[in-house]
Structure formats: C-alpha cells, structure tokens
Image 1 (tube, rainbow, N blue to C red):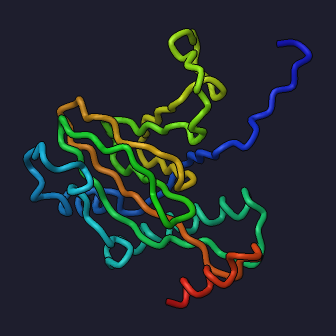
Image 2 (cartoon, rainbow, N blue to C red):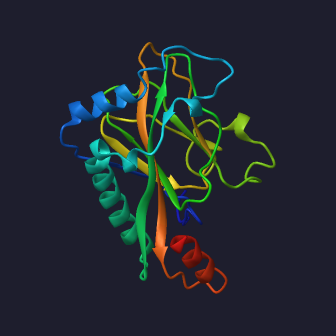
Length: 213
C-alpha cells in the first residue's frame, strides 16, 4: 500500500521476553511436585482445578517471584511513563495440563497486567488471545481472509518457548489450547497490581483504601 500510513490505534500490548533463572532444574522439580496428585483427567473439572495457588508466599519460589516482578515492572514503567505509582506482583500460581486437557476462556479480574512464565523446554500447547473489541467483526469477513495479521484477526496464538515470559493487560480474554501431545504442560502464571496515589479524579480514594485494607 504505497503512500498509506497505517497506525495500530489503541493497541493492546502483548509483551514477550525471556527470563534468566538460576537453578532451573530445581524450579522444574518444584513445579512438577506441586501437581504430583493430578494424574487423571476428570471431565467434570476444568483446568483451573489443576492449579497450585499462592506461590508468591512460598520461600522456594521467592527468587522466581523477585525476578519476574523486577523484569515486568521495569518494562511497564518504561511502557507507560508513569510517576507516583508502582507496579508489583500480587499473586502467582502454577498450572498443569495433562495430555487431552485444555483451559477455559477467561480473563483476570481485579488486576492490571497478567502473565505467564514457561520454564520447561517443551510447552506442548499454545495460549490463544481474543480481540477485546467486541464489535470488531460485526460484519464477519474472517472466512474470506487469506493472510492473518493484527488488523484482521479475531484471535492470536502464542506458542511458548523455553524460559519465555509473556504478559498482557488483564482484560484480554485468553485460554490454554488443548494439549494434544503426550507431554504434561506446566506453567507459572501471575498478576500485577499497582500501589500509590492514582490521580484520576474518582479513583484515588478507592485505590488507596483498597491497598490499606
């Protein structure tokens, strides 16, 4: 398209980077241990039941928490150019998908950003994101698209690499695709919140009251 300026207006950032982790082998053992009881698929239970919560409170995951928090928060500060508030990791958990399992379509309420870390060499199923603009395809042309890109696709799939760290606005709906391999899928998920004095006229009191509670 010659002489055409194309802007990704009001884009939702999906940030991908890598995380250097010390004692990676020990981390993997700890994650597997979290889910040692999850050995069979229960059709009545979604993947959310295959979760080990509150890892940010456990000593053996403290170094990982600090590494994720430092990297994510420094990137968010640069991205948003804010002052007077800080970003921090407010919760962290591990997930496990056996062969044949997948996740539910969901988003993360009551947080600012959310993310996932993939410490294993093989993560057999991807993470799919859905467009937050509900009426983007009110006239559905998706069946006529010959090549997908950021302006015409209603969803986007991330296929994680070893030690990849991804994070995104918590309002983005997403799900873990069905694990079609013979390998169990593990990951570490987390949420990012903020603290400080929000200067938005109707929000500063609410946010400060919530943080003090």
